[in-house]
Image (cartoon, rainbow, N blue to C red; front, top):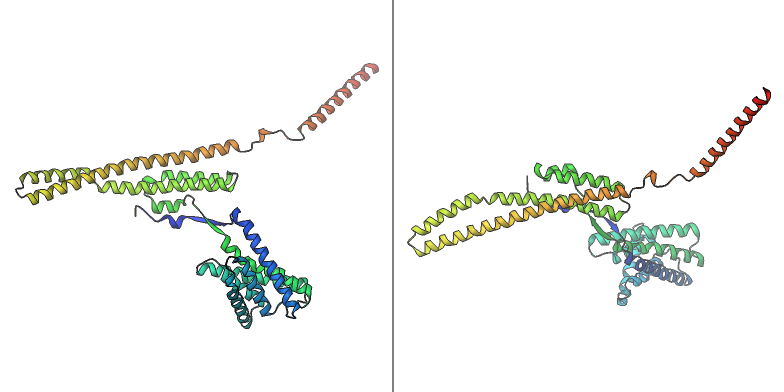
Length: 354
């Protein structure tokens, strides 16, 4: 079994849109849709159909300028690329706006092949859905209202190409499954990790918010990482046998005393120095091993305390009485009083009859 392993494959995560990016993203999308609307209305006033390839390409090209306001010199490139891409996409059988959204998404996507593809797909889908909604609202795109509907919905849909680039991948860690623990850790190192995994599974159902659950997962994953470190340190310490090194050193000391050649004696003394350094390294490894073991104990105790804390914080039935308890008690008391009065009246009647 390998004493270490690359844990990058164990890390998972989620995509999140930071709060600092949300307002900026909405403003850029609104600006894209507004520019697309104005461009569509202008070209509609010139007699061009809002669903024509040239209209969609030019409108999306102008909308892209909002995302690159600091580079206005790129406007000719945007216009040429979106117009040519839209015409080409329509020739291949795609809609004008979906083709324009695809080209615009590729241009505005994150750097890298995958980022460009993500942006293109988001722009393609968003613009296609926007154009379809506009056709449902105003079937005739040659009218002023039809051009406005297409410009707003298709432009807003195409601006979704900005979303993949704004998302950020947040790496999350959690304790690996027992099967993976068995595959990567030897038997003496598994017990603390199993306990951390069990506690994490329980706390993931009780934690009040996502941040708490993610933090607990980080601690549980830390327990596993510390187990890997302990396994590696023990393997390294085992390779540095102090008895074997000591015996080898004692033999070299005798050779130094018996050597009559200064060169040979110096080499033996140098070898003794390396052996002493190995023993010193072993001492450092042993000390680091003890520190790592104490950290693992600390992390497991942290999880146990968190479980106890969540148990205390959990809502219990005895914390509050039922809302109707007071009214029920009043009804029961009234009912008991009425029953008592009825029994007293019955007894008085029996006395009168007697």
